[in-house]
Length: 247
Image (cartoon, rainbow, N blue to C red; front, side, top):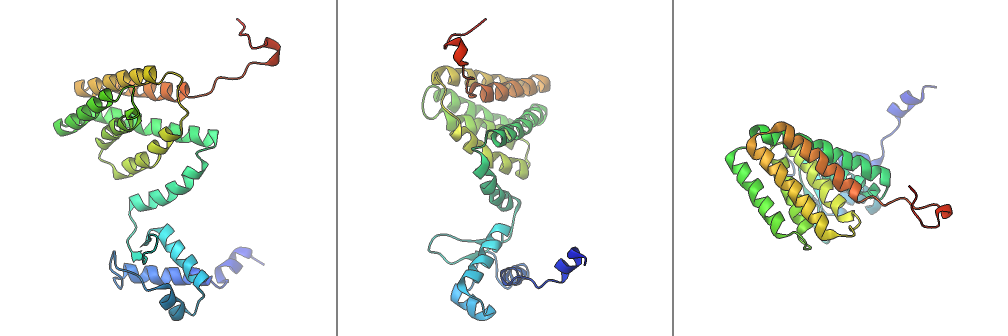
């Protein structure tokens, strides 16, 4: 027997049917965006379903971007957007950030996005975008050696990525960069690290201001590579060395 054919004709699960019905009504205008959905009790009566079944349907709708919910508040209808879909996926991806290899893949994604952003910014940043980038750089300078350096670091990079004008790229950047930086271990000399990072930010800004595509791209690539590797733990010495380094 063809198992694929059997799957096609298998009865659909009740939560799937409830979710699809409500999504169809949202898309058809029965429930306007931000309108409250019926209560769980009403949905249970309408679909002759239990509360756990209705809750599973609502959770599925939220994951698909058709529902927003808050603690103690009625679920409300919404229409999915690039941002909401990516954020829902991002919540799952962030669960694996503790894994070294997964973290390295996300760092690579960030490097790919931001080197491309530096290139595009050097090509076509307008005066308003340059002014925003300069303001972010100045705040980053003022925060060197303080607890505010990381947020201003993120803000500088975000201002650069914003020049591209692509909401998908900006959403991906927003989803992961703050989390990655927050989870990085501290450096032994935070002030020195901040000074190096700021100087590289300044070089990137100057290259963008000059329209120097090659330098902007190269400095950004070097900046992100150095920043990531500076946080990696040094390998442990073998017992045979007795804690002594060898040459």
